[in-house]
Image: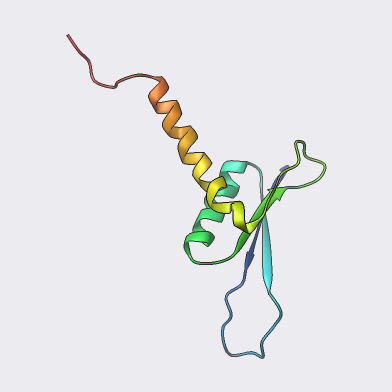
Length: 93
């Protein structure tokens, strides 16, 4: 198993402990699609998310939290372009 992508996200505060400084967790993934799916779930949950590739994977990518929405959107735009490239799905006479 060769993980090439990571997603880091803030851990929600439980309110029961003394305030900690920016607690974060990181998960790794084999593909960009898996990383995007996970990042999307955390981002939609209101958490601050960053992502990128793990060295020595090339090309290197680092997606800061400000660019996460555009990175997540790029997946759905590419899927829409692929669907449109196949032409209409209805048969005409």
